[in-house]
Amino acid sequence: MPGPPPGRQLRLADLPGYGYAQVSQTERASWQPLLEGYAERRPTLALFVVLVDARRGIEAEEHQLVEWLASLSIPTRVVFTKVDKLRASARGLLRQAARAAFPGGGVATPLLTSAETGDGVGELWAAIIAALPALPAAGEFAVRGPDA
Image (cartoon, rainbow, N blue to C red; front, side, top):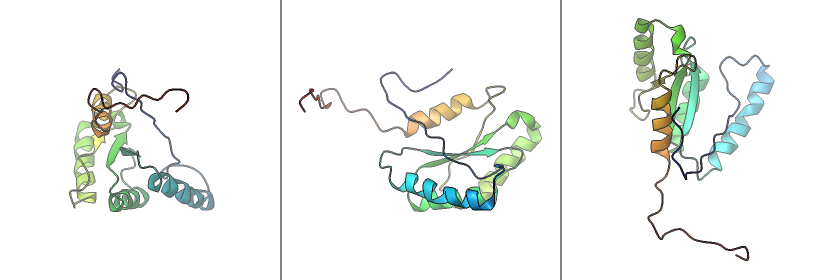
Protein backbone atom coordinates (compact mmCIF):
# COMPACT_ATOMS: atom_id res chain seq x y z
CA MET A 1 0.00 0.00 0.00
CA PRO A 2 1.34 3.47 -0.84
CA GLY A 3 2.29 5.74 2.01
CA PRO A 4 4.49 8.64 2.97
CA PRO A 5 8.01 8.64 1.55
CA PRO A 6 10.73 7.19 3.78
CA GLY A 7 12.31 9.70 6.10
CA ARG A 8 9.33 12.07 5.97
CA GLN A 9 7.23 12.85 8.98
CA LEU A 10 3.54 13.00 8.29
CA ARG A 11 0.73 13.63 10.73
CA LEU A 12 -2.89 13.03 9.88
CA ALA A 13 -5.58 14.58 12.04
CA ASP A 14 -9.13 13.30 11.96
CA LEU A 15 -11.39 16.23 12.78
CA PRO A 16 -15.10 15.98 13.51
CA GLY A 17 -17.14 15.90 10.34
CA TYR A 18 -20.45 17.30 9.36
CA GLY A 19 -22.27 15.11 6.89
CA TYR A 20 -23.91 12.04 8.26
CA ALA A 21 -22.89 12.36 11.91
CA GLN A 22 -25.96 11.63 13.98
CA VAL A 23 -25.54 14.25 16.67
CA SER A 24 -27.54 17.23 17.82
CA GLN A 25 -27.27 20.54 15.98
CA THR A 26 -25.83 22.05 19.18
CA GLU A 27 -23.01 19.49 19.31
CA ARG A 28 -22.36 19.86 15.60
CA ALA A 29 -22.18 23.67 16.02
CA SER A 30 -19.66 23.21 18.85
CA TRP A 31 -17.28 21.55 16.39
CA GLN A 32 -16.95 24.70 14.28
CA PRO A 33 -14.59 26.58 16.65
CA LEU A 34 -12.47 23.43 17.00
CA LEU A 35 -12.19 23.01 13.26
CA GLU A 36 -11.56 26.73 12.64
CA GLY A 37 -8.93 26.92 15.37
CA TYR A 38 -7.15 23.89 14.03
CA ALA A 39 -7.03 25.17 10.46
CA GLU A 40 -6.12 28.75 11.35
CA ARG A 41 -3.35 27.92 13.83
CA ARG A 42 -1.43 25.30 11.86
CA PRO A 43 1.24 26.96 9.72
CA THR A 44 2.50 23.50 8.78
CA LEU A 45 -0.89 22.39 7.48
CA ALA A 46 -0.04 21.18 3.97
CA LEU A 47 -3.40 19.81 2.83
CA PHE A 48 -6.94 19.72 4.18
CA VAL A 49 -8.79 16.67 2.88
CA VAL A 50 -12.57 16.93 2.98
CA LEU A 51 -14.06 13.43 2.96
CA VAL A 52 -17.54 13.16 1.49
CA ASP A 53 -19.66 10.01 1.31
CA ALA A 54 -20.21 9.52 -2.43
CA ARG A 55 -23.77 8.35 -1.80
CA ARG A 56 -24.67 11.75 -0.28
CA GLY A 57 -22.69 14.10 -2.49
CA ILE A 58 -21.55 17.55 -1.42
CA GLU A 59 -23.88 19.19 1.05
CA ALA A 60 -24.02 22.82 2.14
CA GLU A 61 -21.68 22.27 5.11
CA GLU A 62 -18.92 20.79 2.95
CA HIS A 63 -19.35 23.50 0.36
CA GLN A 64 -19.03 26.23 3.01
CA LEU A 65 -16.01 24.49 4.53
CA VAL A 66 -14.19 24.29 1.20
CA GLU A 67 -14.94 27.93 0.40
CA TRP A 68 -13.76 29.03 3.86
CA LEU A 69 -10.53 27.02 3.52
CA ALA A 70 -9.96 28.63 0.12
CA SER A 71 -10.40 32.08 1.71
CA LEU A 72 -7.53 31.17 4.08
CA SER A 73 -5.43 29.87 1.16
CA ILE A 74 -5.32 26.41 2.73
CA PRO A 75 -4.76 23.74 0.08
CA THR A 76 -7.86 21.56 0.01
CA ARG A 77 -8.82 18.34 -1.71
CA VAL A 78 -12.35 16.96 -1.84
CA VAL A 79 -12.32 13.16 -1.64
CA PHE A 80 -15.41 11.06 -2.20
CA THR A 81 -15.46 7.82 -0.25
CA LYS A 82 -17.42 4.61 -0.80
CA VAL A 83 -17.49 5.02 -4.58
CA ASP A 84 -17.69 1.23 -4.85
CA LYS A 85 -21.35 1.65 -3.85
CA LEU A 86 -22.03 3.64 -7.06
CA ARG A 87 -22.37 2.53 -10.66
CA ALA A 88 -19.81 3.86 -13.13
CA SER A 89 -22.34 6.30 -14.62
CA ALA A 90 -23.12 7.68 -11.16
CA ARG A 91 -19.39 8.17 -10.53
CA GLY A 92 -19.13 10.34 -13.64
CA LEU A 93 -22.16 12.39 -12.61
CA LEU A 94 -20.68 12.80 -9.13
CA ARG A 95 -17.43 14.14 -10.54
CA GLN A 96 -19.35 16.58 -12.78
CA ALA A 97 -21.51 17.76 -9.87
CA ALA A 98 -18.42 18.32 -7.73
CA ARG A 99 -16.78 20.43 -10.45
CA ALA A 100 -19.99 22.44 -10.83
CA ALA A 101 -20.15 23.00 -7.05
CA PHE A 102 -16.79 24.80 -7.15
CA PRO A 103 -16.75 26.68 -10.46
CA GLY A 104 -14.01 29.13 -9.48
CA GLY A 105 -11.36 26.57 -10.33
CA GLY A 106 -9.73 26.89 -6.90
CA VAL A 107 -10.53 23.28 -6.03
CA ALA A 108 -8.66 20.43 -7.67
CA THR A 109 -10.60 17.68 -9.37
CA PRO A 110 -12.19 15.60 -6.64
CA LEU A 111 -10.81 12.15 -5.98
CA LEU A 112 -13.03 9.08 -5.95
CA THR A 113 -11.95 6.44 -3.45
CA SER A 114 -13.03 3.15 -1.97
CA ALA A 115 -11.50 1.50 1.09
CA GLU A 116 -13.33 -1.67 0.07
CA THR A 117 -11.74 -2.02 -3.38
CA GLY A 118 -8.70 0.26 -3.01
CA ASP A 119 -9.84 2.42 -5.93
CA GLY A 120 -8.33 5.89 -5.78
CA VAL A 121 -6.21 5.22 -2.68
CA GLY A 122 -2.97 5.54 -4.62
CA GLU A 123 -4.15 8.84 -6.10
CA LEU A 124 -5.07 10.11 -2.64
CA TRP A 125 -1.61 9.26 -1.28
CA ALA A 126 -0.07 10.92 -4.32
CA ALA A 127 -2.07 14.11 -3.61
CA ILE A 128 -1.01 14.07 0.04
CA ILE A 129 2.64 13.52 -0.80
CA ALA A 130 2.59 16.20 -3.51
CA ALA A 131 1.27 18.68 -0.92
CA LEU A 132 4.16 18.08 1.48
CA PRO A 133 6.84 20.77 1.58
CA ALA A 134 10.07 19.92 -0.17
CA LEU A 135 12.83 18.38 1.89
CA PRO A 136 15.77 20.69 2.53
CA ALA A 137 18.77 20.11 0.29
CA ALA A 138 21.68 18.11 1.72
CA GLY A 139 23.53 20.16 4.30
CA GLU A 140 20.55 22.38 5.13
CA PHE A 141 19.42 20.32 8.11
CA ALA A 142 20.02 21.94 11.47
CA VAL A 143 21.54 19.43 13.85
CA ARG A 144 20.62 20.02 17.45
CA GLY A 145 22.35 18.37 20.32
CA PRO A 146 20.85 17.58 23.72
CA ASP A 147 21.99 20.96 25.09
CA ALA A 148 20.43 23.00 22.26
